Picture: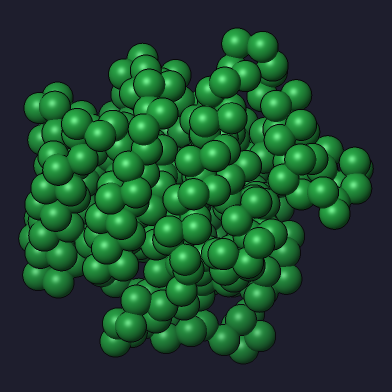
Length: 338
């Protein structure tokens, strides 16, 4: 699926280079210099575009995460927040319902990349009626909330997958010696620079065909969500969070990620949405996330993190297969359309 060894080499180089210039250059300056060096065949304009897409996507992800956290603080679930967020955006109900169906198809496709037997069926977009008359506010809100629930489950499916754990183990074994920058970033919560560096590394790896082809925006989305997940798992390893709290946090992060994907890809053609969602929530994204988490985990925390990942994976598998009740995720799955 991907060459984890080569990927970790590229990520190690990107993070180390960013760390060495962190006090001298802005993220935009570093990105353009680093990408210009590592992607010599790209024009100056192309490098500028890649840099802008990385920074713009990271800003959007932070914006959505902050909005969701504010809603959670006021007692609103992540799923309800996403439903309201999209309902308040431009466009008619029929259009939003159609886009929701396309995102659901992407999530269903993502499931198949893990080799699972798929319960849901791909929705025939062209065979449905997507007029505002057919989609009142109640029906549309309910559909959006259900898509959010499926996105949360997709985020959990990633950390329960064998491909994620295997890549994490390989990442830990890679041993990142120049980890002071990473450790300080994680401890202080100042992970924006780490997200920039990981995003740049993924862009270089994609250009070298070491990871599956995808857009810069999608790769940056994976980088953002992965670094946030690492912070969560480290909190568990240090006793600051429980496994249940980590599961809920990972689920919520997946929901805010879907909100950002919606804003960036809602106008894409059907295959564009399916490919983006499939990469972020499918096995390719899980393999990348695992490798990143393993590599940037502080060396002394490696064994602890792997144990946390295994315990969390087991808890998630129980929920996904047995419908164990976890706060917020206690609803049984039901079809969105039909």
